[in-house]
Length: 446
Image (cartoon, rainbow, N blue to C red; front, side):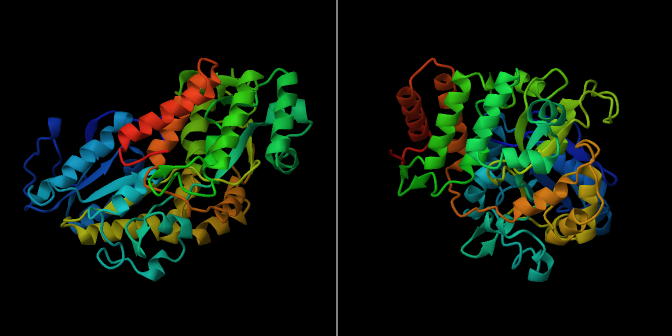
């Protein structure tokens, strides 16, 4: 499942007018008076990275005398990858100002671009050093590495936690203290016991069918595909069994990820105890959904701001993340090197991003400093959630990722929704999943 921002935009081109000129309407370039080859085109699927760039690195455009264009294309129906792939095919024939210089990728399909010639070595070709990269979490480097060559960098690390409503915890569990709540959620058996208590008290443990998926899928013992054969891991089977039980017993609210009801369940009128979220989800999604009035400041008194807290939950996991890749054929290496260094290697910048946004950044030194400080999140009732994320990040294991993760993760959830709803059998749902995967990837079998 892809990461979404509440600021998702659809199939548009945005230009960052950093100097004297910018892309005009419909992508027509205005006369900038600048020689060919000084336009940097950055491909991404929402405006999250543009906001990070604008606030923390936009001065680099002036330093390198370049114009930066953000080409933002929605991920819906795979539009982002389709358009990016088409643009990358034209790298050798298009003029310099139209070339892709930098593009963003997600964890679920990172290997597709890392294994291709479309991305380049961030050390040998871009120029980052081992010293530059030493504070980054190892998993964030491994996921974009092939045969020891690192092809991307990220400003994020995305360990996951369980975010729960403090008020509901007090009523049902007798405490909202994260340490005490964690003791009651420390494994899946205890998690199920709390789900039963929540149901008896009139609350839902989870919102829908997909909520716990990443806590299971990112702890698998083998890749989705082994020797061109789809192999269902035992952890995926556990998710299926748990979700069916929760649906039958009304422990969840029968929603699907990103649906209107799922979003509403996180707000003032929701009756759901908690949500599995990684770092980006808390500040970019949950906080906005918790507000009663999004036009007013995010502060206590607006909806249930301050009523959430986080704990590790039954299993450590990660979810998502966004990596920057320099495109083969780019003519703006010096700018890209400085951009990558500023946004993914500079401890001071990384620390400030976390302090400003509550996101968890990819710098061990910066995160450890905040974890050991008196930092507090008002949204989380004064909790220092960075300390929990810092511990969870150490447990992330990317050894079982595969080229098929995006499609497998999306399709198994979608194909089993009717099963959880009681409309089809499990056998029919799995058959639909296999057929869909084999349509998408004819080389696969089961």
